[in-house]
Image (cartoon, rainbow, N blue to C red; front, side, top):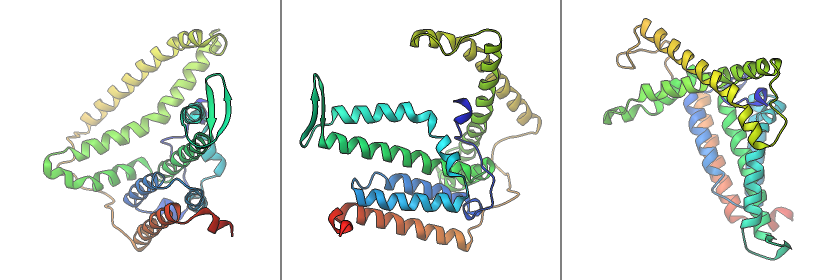
Length: 274
């Protein structure tokens, strides 16, 4: 399961998405995530599906690699579906047993919420798959630069987010090593009830926290040794500049958002059938 977590990892490839300005990908991802909550109909989800599949094909990131990152959220997905399925009321009752009742509205909400969550994770993951941590840091800092006028430490915030993304795969790899070491010493991490499994995680969490603090301390010392003093007065080796493909990407995102809102909210489903 640890190796299945791909969030924060960069997938190198030669695609148009990899060559886009990081600011375009950040704004585009934000618009895509917002668009998922602007409709609640089958035509809207069809448009979102077509758009997401097209973007995945353009990114040249294998579909199996994206689906691999979905495995860690299966439990969260199931809990979300069950809560919406049994707690949402409305429409005709489809099933009733003891305290459990499934209605048409509950089934519809559960299905739509599951699809929305999957699309949300897949869409946001594409940004990290196609953007290096350095480029992501520069993009965040550039987008938040106007906040410097009200004395918001934009550079430091962007740096912290970049370091956090860098630490995710490192800590996952460290966790995998610690688990293998504990299993080699006879630790049983998979049998027993939930309480016993939680207790068996203590020998993993303690060295993991120690390793994380040690890595953070080493990073802080390395930054001090290189005279790092924040973003004031710093220049960029590769300054961000918009190109024609970036402007075209903005236009495509605006067209998509308008289309998904109009089709998802104002076009009846029977028109699509006929």
